Image (cartoon, rainbow, N blue to C red; front, side):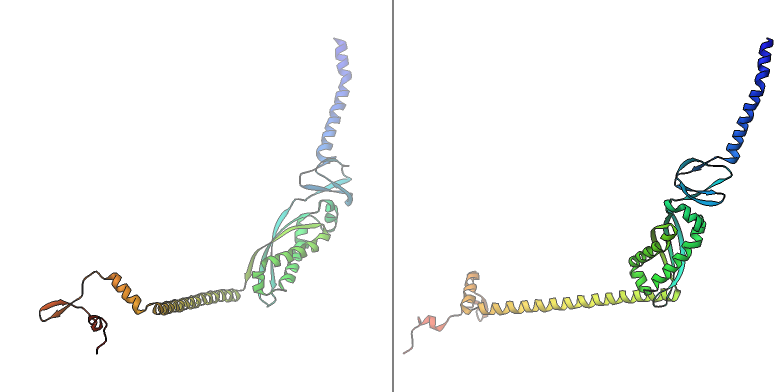
Length: 281
């Protein structure tokens, strides 16, 4: 009994030390955090006493030295941002363009990007916004307002390529550029609408004229066909053929004429037939 109490008393300092060690370890884990967690779609930039290091942390958990080392996490997923920029066309028309830009940070250069530019907000406001404005102004200045509308795909491709070349040295990769909308001055918009109406009316008038020409040509062709048919008919209708057709259609009855004694048959008798075709002496 006394031995058990004595042993418990001897173990008490050990238990106290163990509890204190666990508490210290818990304190260090919570407040000093000797590890860093990099989430999916992120990369970690290591800074030792505020200086950016060459090593980049991938996704997962990584041990670090508390106080001495800190980690800045940057998103390397594809992001989309919209930009509104004003520019002038080749024919000096004011155009406001809305662009949607898909972009992401190069995962292999996040440390350089953070060192030279900063985080995502500084990337957008510091380098992307002025780059989009400059590239758009340079591209639209080469085309008239009408060409900007009719050659939209060509303009989009030019902006896409120029923006990629402009931002690639900063470690920012442009995935795609979309021209969402163009806005023109009210005067130019009304001029475009009037031109479209005039073009539609001209097309309608041309269609009507073409239809009238085709109908007139059809009438000419029909008249030529009828004239040719009549000419051929005159060549083939001889007196003998007409007599033959009359005989074939005769029903055996003579036509009737009115005489003094009433209706009598009309018989056309050739005098030559009565004489048997004999010549007079």
